[in-house]
Amino acid sequence: MEKDRRDIRKFPDPILREKAEFVEDVNGDIIALIKRMEDIMHRAKGIGLAANQIGIRKSIIVAEVDGDKVVIINPLILESYGEDRMEEGCLSIPNTYIEITRPTGAVIKGINEEGNEVQREYGGLIARVIQHEIDHLQGTLIVDYLSPSEFIKFQMEYEKISKGEDK
Ligand code: ZN
Image (cartoon, rainbow, N blue to C red; front, side, top):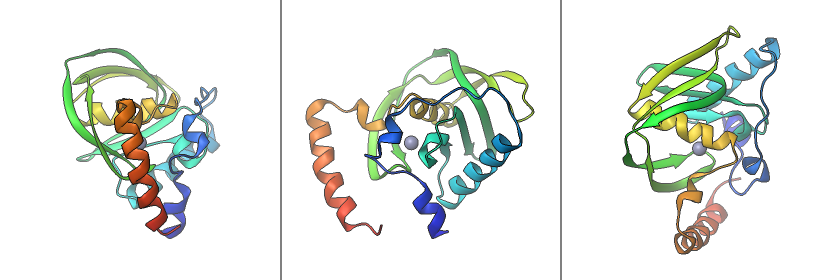
């Protein structure tokens, strides 16, 4: 359990800023990686995880909200609509919660675990989680939604918190 906790890369780890690469072939290694991502997400009590959060630059996200389980390889937002503001946390930025405005719903295209192209519309919390995870694949983090002065404040507080945390 502790090992998995350490598997999650924490801000300011540079890999969190790198863009994920498209997955060309959904082979056994990719399926094994997805299973590992789901395990780590569950153990960390998270509701979403992107592959680069565990140090792997592949375009894969997993999410689970109220039993609605989502695995999307090479996810792409085709369209989005509405606007909603809500506080978000991130497994890679412990003890930090930031209010973020995002579209309420989105149509997402991608590839499923069978290697087939899929397209689905998501709304509510799961739509928010998916958009948060797609941000990760682009190297974007919740702290990027802060104003410059809010970001400086965050950094000071985060440093304090990080020093106190078990490594
Ligand atoms: Zn996150």
